[in-house]
Length: 300
Ligand SMILES: Nc1nc2c(ncn2[C@@H]2O[C@H](COP(=O)(O)OP(=O)(O)OP(=O)(O)O)[C@@H](O)[C@H]2O)c(=O)[nH]1
Ligand SMILES: [Mg+2]
Ligand SMILES: [Zn+2]
Image (cartoon, rainbow, N blue to C red; front, side, top):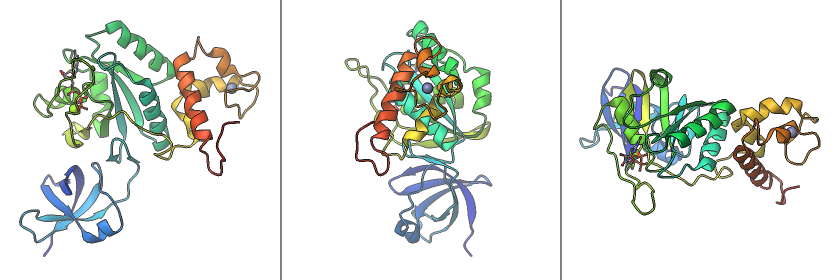
């Protein structure tokens, strides 16, 4: 008789999925034909039903992917509660466009973002400045460094539910995982001396248990197109809570904060609202507006 068990996908490499069942077993699974037929691609974080396959090499099979509460395309993760957005204050230079894009996506998918500015040992004042900008905007921010203990507040934030990591290569995602989970859990890479970029050391997402939840290290990435992942122009403001707060003072209730008269948001740019954040908001808004459904293109 086939023994069915539910669990969570902790890893998926080359069509072979590792599932941790709720009673603590680890099952190596292949994918069932009908799942492939339905073009459902299993993801790390997916809750699944597993059964026996009859194949001694990969003894189990994914029978069913249970409904997802959300999923990210980049990095590919399902059922996230919290996403740690890791950006180094230097080496590599922080890609704040990518950070803001991920904050918009978190707001669309109802994922709690927590921002980590890493390598604060290399440039403490840069890390503090970034944390001030994003902290004032309304996000949970921490500055971290490989030589400092992890803030107990941060440990609490990631101690339950499913936490993913996202950020460019070489910022220290795996280094952070090792600090939390124990040295040697993940391989840590170098950054190139010349380009100050990471070398894509982590190749696959992998989920580990931590306290009452799970934490997932992921490969670094830099390219992320908001339009391609389905974000709409109406979603952009969700990544800018400081502008939503300020918009109460705008003359028009549907103010886009671009060219409208008596726009309180624009009045606050450079003081309460960070100029770089505003510029990125505007760039994303205009880009997605020009690609809105039924649009002939161009921003009016
Ligand atoms: N000075 C300093 N170096 C760090 C810190 N965190 C990580 N590094 C270094 O940065 C390099 C890259 O670290 P990783 O942890 O492999 O980075 P990653 O984000 O996992 O990179 P990918 O797996 O390629 O996406 C390594 O040489 C680390 O030792 C830090 O807080 N301070
Ligand atoms: Mg890594
Ligand atoms: Zn406005």
